[in-house]
Image (cartoon, rainbow, N blue to C red; front, side):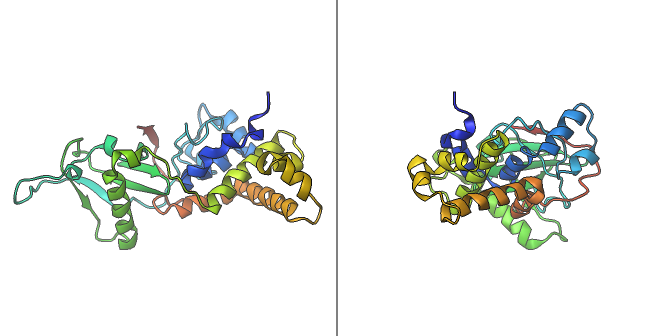
Length: 271
């Protein structure tokens, strides 16, 4: 049976990941992270997890379809979801006025950082992170609460992202994006090349798996563009795996990363 890295179809899911989940795909391939997981998984301190930008360590055998990494944050979420104590003048409510976690598009996780409850939603190409008031229940009318000192730009982006994810039609929520960009394709290919090299393959073998036998046979030359492209995939993939995956988390503006991690005990539950 062929190894999974030889099949391009095994990496199609990586085309549809939002930045924070894509960062996890690189981190879980880091052998040093895997050693930390094997050594500390039963009693990992926050300091160990914070080395990698995580709130808690996660099994590296789980890919982004199974794992929901909680990245250590350096700032509170700029928006709080609260129960709306005021009724509309005419007494009529729109369906989107009522809070429901199950109505949200994408993957959801409730994250308790020891001080508050945070809701994280990830759905390519956007995501959102918000605080949730303890009085807000499913079915309640909700409102957005923005602290006076919050960064207004970040708060407005969060509100816009949450509104889009909460209001998306059901068929849109269940359908991944059809068109992917060159960045998505690059990351999927880089992950495949990394897996091939880790399995002991030569550089030509992952190239064949990605571009096909005919293309490689025709264009694989020392000074050729195809070989240069594979070298670039290797160089950038290794750099991302070694630590530059953090740049993907920063790209996801709803999940800022702290090198120190949170100071309170973190627990999470994916919904």
